[in-house]
Image (cartoon, rainbow, N blue to C red; front, top):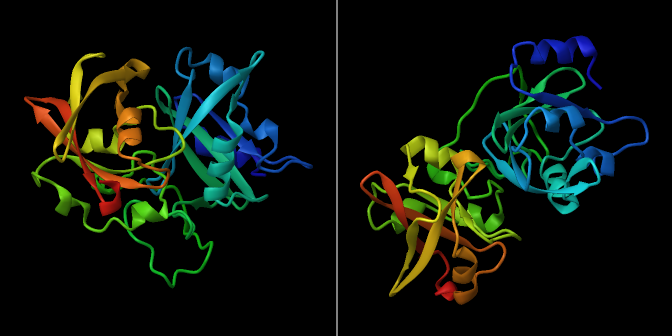
Length: 282
């Protein structure tokens, strides 16, 4: 556990709501208490933490975690939290600093007990900014003082989790009909009710979306599927419904990846052109 003097120094210039998590004797990172949000943190952001949160880390990866309430307490769903713990190989010497970024988005910084911050992923978590070299030592980290990093928006999967199938998508820009169009690689996770547009892609291309319930389309080879634009979190989390029907129709499975090319009419995103990676998906 970090000394209070260290945690105070780290958060002294943070104006947004924040909190720390570290292990107490007898706990592990998968203990139920580690999945809960401090009550004062939840109260400080009315309406922001309702159905889900998105955690992002220094090296660009992000995780979507769904939420559930038990009486007055707010918890992250166990399987989502466990995936975050496993992907980041959290151990007894790790300390997590959660900082509210925007609506449902939280930035997570990982510090060792010696005060060093982890800014690079372990081998098992493929960073979206680059491919790790096969000879990189397992579970190796880069430790340094806090530093901001950014990832190429074109290499983000929708949920930020680097699965092997997503890592196998080489040169996704070659799938594009128009090489100038914004795009991202979407890897199917266990929840595919809607298609979220990754926040880094929105920022990089300055994307704009129509009002909620405005029509959009999925464009596929010889097919056109209708959908609707949805705006959650005060417009900070744009997404499109109709995605689950598309996944069923084309038999897309968890772990499958597609390239999503965004088509715009004027300034607004009005269609998603879906490019299949595997011929068997067609």
